[in-house]
Image 1 (cartoon, helix red, strand yellow):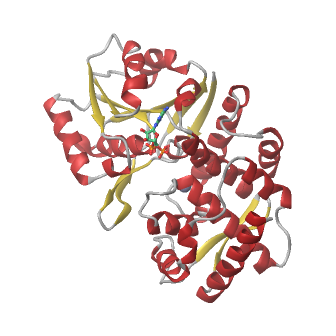
Image 2 (cartoon, protein in one colour):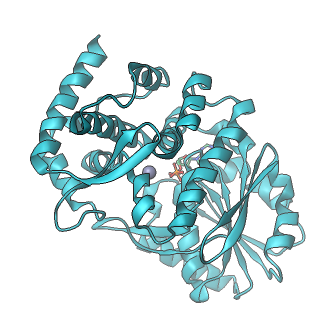
Image 3 (tube, rainbow, N blue to C red):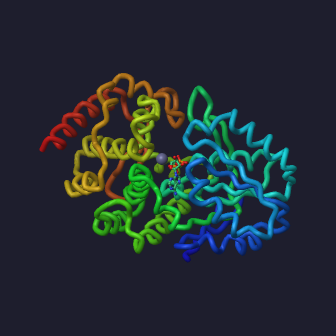
Length: 365
Ligand code: ADP
Ligand code: ZN
């Protein structure tokens, strides 16, 4: 098992990664959660039948409650949040109780937000079960959606520990692999060219092979932790994590979060951001090999919403990272080095047209 210490201004906590890491859960709680009075496991309807029993087996010494939410983004709601708080109150969880988030980003965000606010905040541990959760389990951002937009209600609340058992990823659908892996490629592109090289020369298909998985997740978490550690409250360098997200979020929102997963949309957004970077800096940043590799991993470059340039532009302008309606995008100076730049609307649109032309050419070639 590998362990990374995540250091933030407000707290330091361990992230353990490995095959069968779940067997360390009891010990981890003894170490990281002193005086734990009782435990509420929050999980979703897909993960519960797969792993809940196994997790409970590790907690025989504790009073354990469970709460299963419907799988899917719609559970990140005020309604579900209130239900969770009500359930915790009915179980009489006190200030020394522990919440365990067992699942992907949805479970982590909702359970973490409940933990951040229940009795003004209790402790929580994350047991991520998706590849994408490498991303949400570092940084302490927790929260829910409002009917007017995603992640508009939330808090910063760091977990006591994160336990990543790579065996739990074996049941993950192909789309979820693509979703999580896109964010990992992103980390290489913005900050670690060597890691990017490692990925592109060793990973020929998804799912990532078991013998490489621990290493890949570990490096991704280290990179994320490094960035978050430098800049906990999101300014400066943390903004680079948004590479591909300006267009990615717009595609997701425009498709009503139905036909495309977060990471798949981010991958299209990254391709666009790279093309735009190349046009604005007038030089090549990644080689043709990059696009071939992405295609080989099963990503689509095209999505029907790309035909709605005007609507996408409007969505991009609503992004809460912008200031005064002016789009700010993360661009690449070179592989492994990012920059945040103001981009004019017209340039966004022009580049969208050439991106579409390029995608069509690329797809039919
Ligand atoms: P993320 O935001 O990390 O992608 P979600 O919570 O949206 O995570 O989960 C994505 C989907 O995958 C959900 O339908 C969830 O129930 C399902 N899921 C999560 N973990 C697993 C797993 N280990 N095996 C199979 N399905 C899973
Ligand atoms: Zn993302």
